[in-house]
Length: 242
Image (cartoon, rainbow, N blue to C red; front, side, top):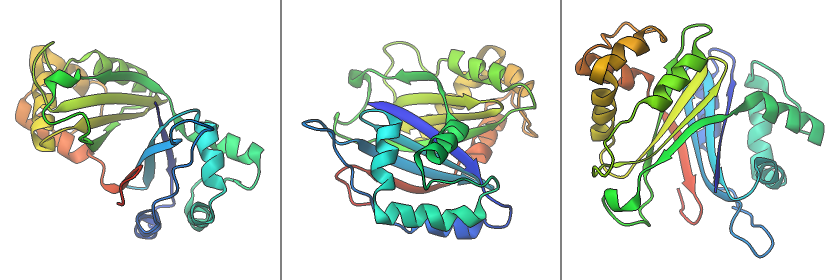
């Protein structure tokens, strides 16, 4: 299974309309590969200010899934409804325009860490909750920020945890951290704050992000995480009506 993130911005002031469009459509058909699993496993959509973030889990290549979704009238209607609100125009009517948008919107994965199943609560079939963290990188420091996040271990090896998976995406100074939690998301963010402030990590982060919080201490860092957490508009999984 592959994981992708896409992001684009909408015109300031249009956020309520964009939120309504993105949260109001039904669950699209997952599609399938010949004699294989569903193409689309899970889609989560976040909205932070005027930035939209989509995270998709797919079996196969993203282009296959986008082609499948582009043939569904419901999805086409949603994308067309969004078009007037985009800061940067796009043309999804042809393959070239769709590929150009994907190239511009894609956030490459720079780090992906999974926790062994035996360290997690519940059963393997329990789908984790998702928390999106959009780090406000200072200009030109997105690369160093992504490296710092990737190098920070939240837990010791073989320690039980609710943190099921962490994926870090980055393009330029747009740095996204997707955390999957099987249990309390608040406890998971507490763990991240404690790990980040251990051995001066908060001070190193303070040099790379815009922040008014005290990142040297756990309480200030926890407040920072709360501020950069992305509101979740939709979270749809294959075989689950949500």
